[in-house]
Length: 409
Ligand SMILES: Cc1cc2nc3c(=O)[nH]c(=O)nc-3n(C[C@H](O)[C@H](O)[C@H](O)COP(=O)(O)OP(=O)(O)OC[C@H]3O[C@@H](n4cnc5c(N)ncnc54)[C@H](O)[C@@H]3O)c2cc1C
Image (cartoon, rainbow, N blue to C red; front, side):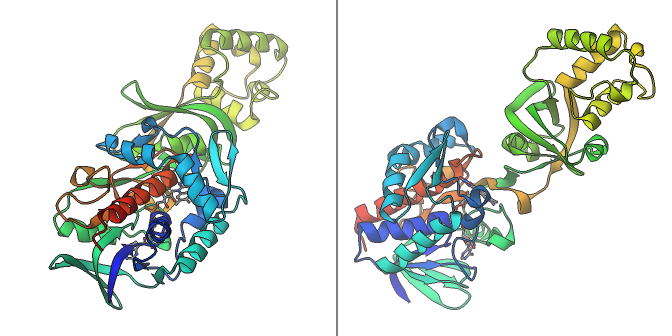
C-alpha cells in the first residue's frame, strides 16, 4: 500500500502528528499503524483519568536524558500556547490547576475522542491491530512491514513510545529492538515515575499510612533528588507523588537510600524542644501513647522503636540522648532502596533512542532521510506533571513541520 506518510504508533505523539499533518497539508495521504485494537489506550489513563496534558512551567530542568539539550528547540517552538491552540481547534480547551494543565472536561477519554474524531474527519486512515515488525528501505522510500500488510512511504514517523505501562498499553519495546538491529544506538531503558521498593520490614508495618514528607533520594550522603508531598507506606516500600518524582535514578544508581523528613516544617533544634515539652505533658503515660495526637499513632510508635525504646516503658525514660535520637529519626527516616516496581507500573521510560542520531529541529534521523522518531521512544523523559505529554506534542509537531516544509511528498 503506497502512502505519503506512515505513522507507526497511534498513541499521544502519533495521533497528534497525524492530525497536525492533515491540518497543515490536507493533500497528503496519512496512515497510522497501531498494534492494539484501539488508539491511545495509554492516554486514556493519564493523570488518573484526567490527563495532565501539559505544564505552565515547561523548562529544560524538568527533562532528562543523556543529551537533554536536544529537546530545547521543540519545547520552545511548539510550546504550551501552540499546543493550547492546537487542542482548542480540535475541541479541547485547557484549564489550569496551579502549574498543571488539563482538558476543561477533566476527562482523558475526551482528549482521545477529539484526536480520533478529528483524525478521521481530516481523512487520516487508522489501521488498528496492525503491529509493525520491520522497516526496510526501498529505493528512496521506506517499506513498513506489519503483521497484516506492508506499506510504502517516503516519510515515516515512529511514535511507538517506550516500555512504561507495559504490554497492556502496547509498550513492549518491539520498535526499539527493530531500530537497534538496524544499527540505531540506544540508551538503556529504565522505569521512571514509579513506586520504589525498599527493605520493607518498617514500611510493611506502616502499610496504608500516608504522611506529608520531604523525600530525598540519597547516595553516599549526597542528595540526588528531593521532592515534597504525600508519601504512602506499602508492603513493598514507598509510593505517592514525591516518591514517583525522585524515582528516576533508582534503576541507574546502585545503593541508594530514601530519607524521609516527616517534620519538614520544623528544624532539628526546635524539634528537640518540642519533644522535650511533650515529655512534661505526657509524663504519666506509657511510650505507646507518647505521639498520640501529634503523629499517626502507628508511625509514632515505629519512630520510638527505631530509637531503641520499649513502648511498654514510661515516657519518663526519654533522656536527652533519646530526644536527639527521636528528632533525628523524624528528620531522617531512612529506607534502603532495592529497586522499583518496574515498567508495568512506571509512567515513563528513561532512556531510548540516542538523540545524537536525530536532528533536534526536525526529529529526523541524521542518516535516514524521511525517517522521524518522536515522543517517548527517544532518550528524553520528563518529570511528573504534564511534562511527558508536552514532549509528545512538541516532538510530533517538529516532525510534521519538517515533512510539510520539505514538501517532498
Ligand atoms: C498510568 C500513566 C499515567 C500517565 N499520566 C501522565 C500525565 O498525566 N501527564 C503526562 O505528561 N504524562 C503522563 N504519562 C506519560 C505519557 O502517557 C507518555 O509519556 C506518552 O503517552 C508518550 O507518548 P508516545 O506517543 O510517545 O507513546 P504512547 O502514548 O505510549 O504510544 C505508543 C503507541 O505505539 C503503539 N506501538 C508500540 N509498538 C508498536 C508497533 N511495533 N507497531 C505498531 N504500534 C506500536 C502502542 O500500542 C501505543 O499505542 C502517563 C503514563 C502512564 C503509564
